[in-house]
Length: 230
Length: 359
Image 1: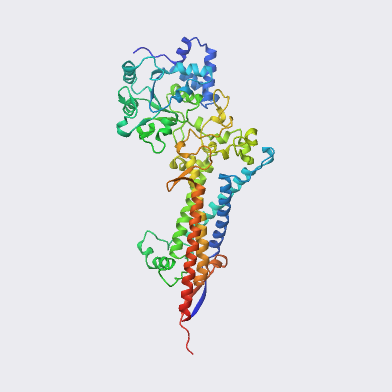
Image 2 (image 1 turned 30 degrees about the vertical axis):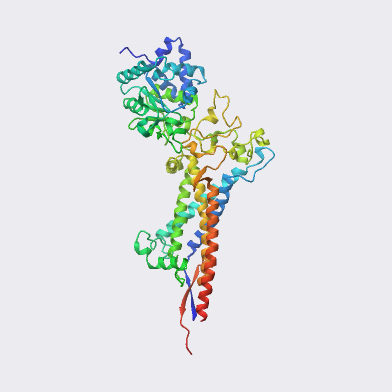
């Protein structure tokens, strides 16, 4: 039995840009965030006026956070108003039982080794879409709200505090907000491992080239086709 | 009911001349964060407002708030604020006791209905009808509700009354609840801290007494003038934080040189209070200046945000005390192990699929 390969343009430029800016900023945010919580590199001699280590790392963290936020808002715009069938929210309806139907069950069954055949999807497969919703969408919103609330603490009468200051008492104090922000940061690493594994696995299992599709935009559609008899 | 004296009259009768009175008013307006423009308002209030009685209740507490209050450092403020308050009921400071004292409380509640201030030190246990704190034969829960019913405003002294403090730390065996969860429909000012700074207490009560209104409060009901910024924002060791120069243990060189105590568990970055600007004991010092990290005593749930000497808060995780990093690493480790196992499964699946294709 031979296989038929067909190239299809799935990830348009805005999606790819979002993906890589997001990947880079989350990496920087995680590493600088870990440093801010546990400053492991520290000058051990001299005067405070010589260094600016923590201030600099915090500056990078906050600067990157605003890039991350702008990028996220751009992606939300694209998901809501972009004319891009593979990047829109329109298809993602977890409140509708139909969404949890055959395609989702097939994909989950194949991940759980219950189903032999690996299904193919042009856009996100439903199980992947669910993890993106939970980790990337919900995770980003959580980090944005808690992050901006903590950022606004340095100016308690400022504009940002007016918008996000209510988050602090919601969690029962500034320390609690720091703790949950730190905990959810690890969820992104958890997601990263699962995500990297899943895309590489897909490339090997079904040759759909998901990995390179985030660079080129093209996914390969794989279909079984009967061999031609001479 | 006899004619009520104004503050100015009381001070005059105590031999304080006009000059001293003016000095006190300007000092007080600075304390309250009113600035120069607040002075005329302050003078007017002092000359026209009658003295307001204060009922000071003690619930589940350690009296550290009272101890702090009576040590208000500035002699003028301490003297006059204590004179200003017509402290008609305080079961710790009163000479009278028992039925006599309770009668005074009842009398004030009747004579000054809706006009007296209720200051609460400590909180009330709610479990088993509040039997874990009894005052004069009744539960403190009932006494508090009864006294608050006709009060003009309630001041919650300290972290106990404001947020619950150690009494309602997990597992909170007596069901202790802070005042704002027990009293509704009354203006409540939270003055947290274990104890609060003396000048913050006198400043807050002076504001209510002179103006008859509440000071500007933040989202957690704290006076903005004193709880507007974090200790970290005005800490004199902040340059060491920004430089990344941290004390690693209590006897290292950094500790001797006064570096930042962040890694020793300092809660300054998450604690709203005036310690780093007003300091304690008349501006002598405050914990960080003495080389000890801030424990965040004026924050909600501060006992449950420990440990005191670690920057990362303890997070209960499957029955152990863990922290965000440990939980994160366990989750990531589990993901890696799961992925490895799944990869083996996938390899087997792929092998069998390839075999099927070859057949």
